[in-house]
Length: 112
Image (cartoon, rainbow, N blue to C red; front, side, top):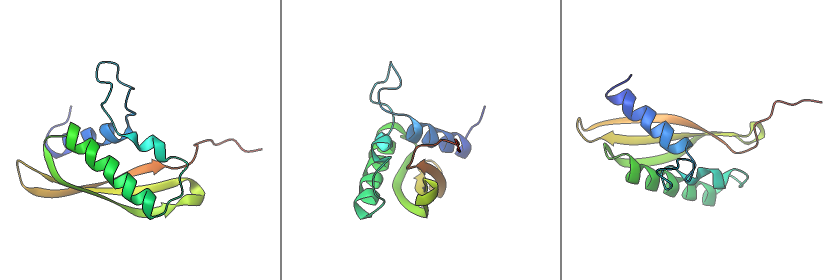
């Protein structure tokens, strides 16, 4: 069991990694980042990703405000983009951030 800041961090990670429709009793819960999996990582990708993250956290994490996201590390050849999500916790008015790994390519370790 966790509480406080750590609870909010885990909640954000759960929201961002859940595909809408995955939870039967809450079919709209989650973030639609999966739609960006095979997209080119250009400015359109960044803007759409920011919009998706902002909307998901606005709807499902009421303990935070001032949400923003930006790509901090691109490793397109490895199939991963690290996204820094910054936010303010409402009760303490403190600024926090987490780095969320977003996999833009299929994750297989098969070598021939």
